[in-house]
Length: 102
Image 1: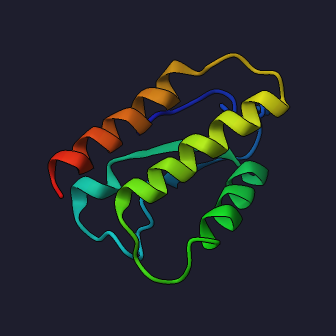
Image 2: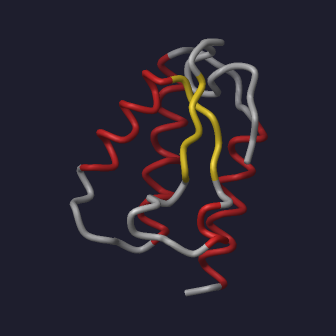
Image 3: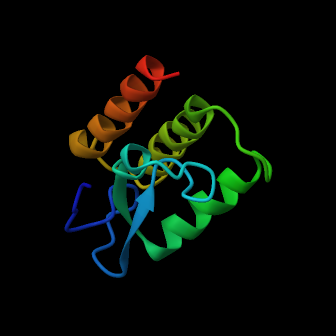
């Protein structure tokens, strides 16, 4: 897990919460739950709302990862923030792991 001092998508320093890259309700194995990072409560809620658009059934891990990458980049552009290499690395690591373990 990555522990940030501020939200990597908006820069807020309060109310950081842990977000699992892959939804716990669908991916129960321990290795899937290792991929997580911190977001502020507002960004976490917005991200969960975006992810819910994928539906109530489990989809391929890559679809969740792509949704996260798009969300992180979109929010960073909106807030004019520099790239957070740690957050991008965890998303790349998750993508690599799940591509190898299909």
